[in-house]
Length: 61
Image (cartoon, rainbow, N blue to C red; front, side, top):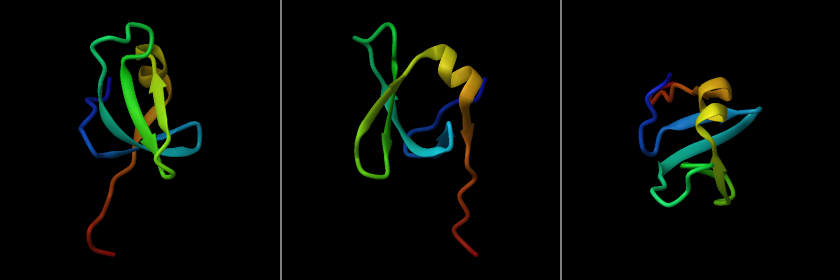
C-alpha cells in the first residue's frame, strides 16, 4: 500500500485529490482528502488500497 503523505497530490477515479489527514473518529472512511474546489472527500482503507495513486509533482518543468 502507498504510504499517504500530507498535502501530496493523489488521483482517485480520475479526480485529483490532496491528502489531508486520517480521521480518528471515522471507522468506515478514515482517510480525508480535499479536491481542487476544497470539497472534503472521505475514503475507506479499501478504496485507498485499490484506487488511490500518487501523482508526482515536479517543481521544475
